Length: 125
Image (cartoon, one colour):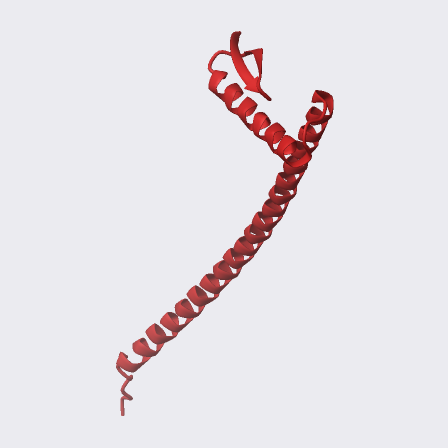
């Protein structure tokens, strides 16, 4: 475990984190500090506990909005995937039908071609 110092609301806190996560923890603390600063600028001085609760609610509100957006994106993706698959099946059917028609026409042309070049039998009199 590593230890880093972060500053939130002008107070320094020593926090532990996994090795390699130091910069991430510092960035998170900086974001929380921005929430606290925003609340203090808009509502004035209030107790640390109230500031923490309000900042937590703001973070959770943003998180819920992101969850809703993520859910909508997943639903849109699934709808597009279904449409893509449906169109793929339609294209497969069109290709099979077209191939079948080409084969029938080719066979008919070959048959007609054979009939036109065959030598008619002569009658012996």
